[in-house]
Structure formats: C-alpha cells, structure tokens
Image: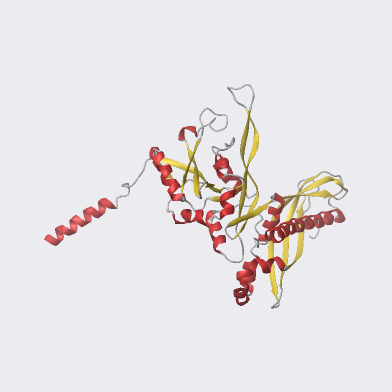
Length: 393
C-alpha cells in the first residue's frame, strides 16, 4: 500500500512538472529580436546590437515617415557575446526572444579580426536560429540595424527579403558554419551596406524625407575565419557561376547591329561542372557552364529570328558569362589567394588519397592551377515579339 501511494505521488509530481504551459511566456513579456549585429569594441570587447520589434509600430504607416517607429535598436558591450547579451537583458523589461531573428550582421572590423570567437555563441545557443542570414557590413553592423525600410516593417526584414530573392549571394548561418569547418574552400557571405533608399512623403513636414536603407552590394571573402576583402556585384555573379549557385540573373549585351543599343537576356537555368585533373605534379580544372536564357528586351531593329543574329547573341552571352567567371577567379586567386569556389571539394571527391597530401596547402595549389573554360549559351525564346522556341528544333 505504501509503495502504491509513493507511485501516485511521483506520478502527480511528474504530471505537474511536464505540463505544457508551465514555462509559457506571453507576447507582452517578450522583446522580439528581428536582427542582430556584432561589432568590435575598444579594449578587445564585443558590442552586441539588437533590432527589437515594437508591436505598436507594426501597422500601416509605421516605420519610415510614420508616427510610431516599428523597431527599437539597443546595444551593449561585453567581454563575450553572451556577456553583452546578459547586460542587455538587465536593461530590458522583457525577455529577449530570438525565434524571429532574420539576419546576423558582422561589422567589418570584427570580421577582419576573426569571427570564430563570435560565431561560437550562436552555434551553442538553443535560442538563436541557424536559418538566419549571415552578412558582413561594410562599416559597422550597428549602422545597418539603425536604418529603416519603407516597404517592410524593419530594415532587418528588408535585408532578409533581399537575401531570399536570390539576386546576389546569400548564406544562412548553418551553411556558413559548414564552410568555416570545411577544408578545400573558404567562407563567403553577403556584403551589406547603408544606401540612400529614396524619398518618403512626410505629412508633418514641408519637404519629403530622404531615407537610408540597406542593400546587398556584393560578397565578403574570407581567408579561414578572417575577412580578406570584397567582390563587387559583377564579380559576385562570376562566383555564383563557378559555384553552380546562380538562381537568376539578367545579362545585358550589345545588340548585333552595334554597341550603342542593347539586348537583355534573362537567365532561365544554368549548370556548372568542375572537373579536376592531377598528374602528380600539377593541378588543372576544366570548367563547363551550360545555360539557357530568354530574350526579354531588344533596343535594335534587326530580325532576331535570323540564324546569324540568334547565334551572335548566344555567342555574346557565352562570352559575357566567361568574362564574369574569370573576373571572380582572378580576384580570388590574384588578390586574396583563396579558393571560394569549392574547387577543393571537387578535387577531394575525385582524388581522396592525393587530397590528404595537398589539403593543408590547398590555397597555394589552387592559385597556381590552370583553369580552362567551356561555356554553352542557348536562347530558348524571344517573348511575344518574334516568338520562337529554338532554331535547333
């Protein structure tokens, strides 16, 4: 009887502890993080900046030019990221809630110093998200989070939308961690900058307000965990071609009739194959890019359905793609001396035994390797004007 009574007491206590709502926090108790920034602070300290949602501001008219701001930006310094967060928590009347965080931005100085010391907190924390977009600011991360967005409720949400759109390079935190831990390729991340975003009418002012927002303007290139430099937007497209990660793009080409008029080619799909060759002494790569595009705009008046005109555009498209790829390749090898194209991964896959000997000096091997290109570009249709499927059909 005594044992039965003891079992009942244990069951009752267990049921009470495991009840679903015991640790629940109401929305009114949460400080919802939309964006986070890491900057280097004096004295080898860390400055953590959080962009927090103001629920009253998430309504029509809020944000830039609105009566009620949609976000609140707060910063604190500490010896570690967690130390800075604990200091912030002591200042806030609500619990810091990370589940809606869209972006993690590293300041330029922090990234040049080495970001492993900062990523460790976000890797270990059970509260932060591994799907947040990872970016490097040209300047301070704090400045990025202090901007506003006219179309979105916050600049962090706007930066997240730009990353999802796939118009440049974007990487999630979990994939960035994998790049940091993988030999044979160095990490890359989105470069984000503060830019003039336009003019917003202001009801209470005579003149409209000129607002500043954020834009993805290229790629941050790392050598191991330290920022080595940047790729601009054209070089970023070349990097995406080489990494077989180009999702969409528009290539503007001179029209066949002359350089003063242009044609716009929309990339429909593409595929890149990297084939390494190794003879025991030297490494060589054969890069084959096959892409399909559609003519979206033509300023000239030549008949696009003529075979010679059609073929001329295809050849120019192939040349433009190779030019972009070579720009990125030359910048990464000549200026930074790093492999950011996963060529090392391709070599490891084909030559696993040889890789064991080369992996510790791979960047040196990569910068001296010969790279040959083969680019095939096919136009599949020309829209509603001069419609055609393909001359090859």
